[in-house]
Length: 154
Image 1: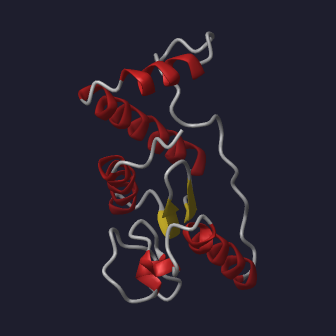
Image 2: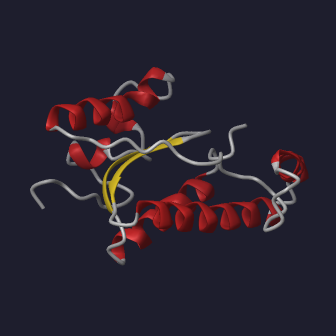
């Protein structure tokens, strides 16, 4: 499913990331939001807590967005994806867990950042990474960007 395709949904994700940055819960170094997934490079002293906050808030907001649009096909699919044992919600938006990897060198950071920024190019959405509006590639190219990022020199 391409649940992250609507601009309003991408904006919910961005607003949540910006909120976490503003309250200094995370330092966001790199991101890309595609139609069906996202990638982040971030740092947090409480990564698990802050990713739970991020996923919980964005899931509620995005489900509300689809409810307000009466997109029952999407809501039904999200309801069917929910585990019967989960009693705290009616829908499952995000995949369970996440895949944090510790970046130990600048070389590794560059490799991960290149992989993230090239995602929209590999998918054929744009020709250059900085042409994808929902990517920190724009920040690194000196173009107007949707949200701020932290740079190692900051």
